[in-house]
Image 1 (tube, rainbow, N blue to C red):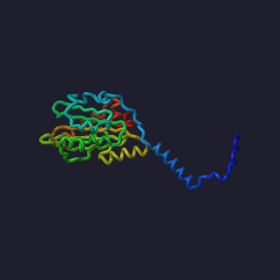
Image 2 (cartoon, rainbow, N blue to C red; image 1 turned 90 degrees about the vertical axis):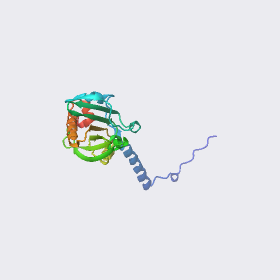
Image 3 (tube, rainbow, N blue to C red; image 1 turned 30 degrees about the vertical axis):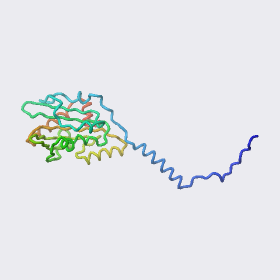
Image 4 (cartoon, one colour; image 1 turned 60 degrees about the vertical axis):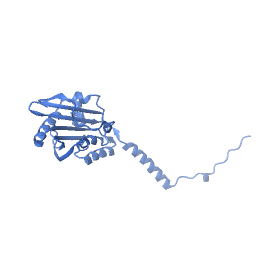
Length: 236
């Protein structure tokens, strides 16, 4: 025997009240905004070995001599932070050898800080000396950082700069602000840290030498290399 269908009573339905509608709408909007604002990778990852190929083995009178002897952070600290790291020592007649480090990451969350000399050198037993903001030779209007580090009778003069997305921060706070600003736009920026160092007690002379070398580095013709160093908007 078929049970007759029960008649539906309009009173058995409760339409959502205004407060529930507003709350539901707010939650839906928040979920949509969160999905839209979730940082996304926007940089095409350079091919493996791009840094090695893009940075010339000779820059002016300087030629590649070695890839060892640089101060580096522990590998445990850098695991998963960088996509590519280049280390080279360049030599030239009548000039102190220049040690070059370039660390590149295609998606930054301020991880480049582990290669900042203020963090890297003390972990190797060095004491950080006077630090100052100087011109970024080869990039008008941009700034770099100069400092010295000493361990016993070894003194290194250091000149370094960073790019996060399209910004060139000069401090850890500026670096984090650059990442945060990009994340607010829904972007996970790429980043690079370039560090030059010279063993010398002559801070002024070493700085002039490193700034001149940096200008040659930023003047390379290779498009991929310029993109890594300067960002997509300045590569051409």
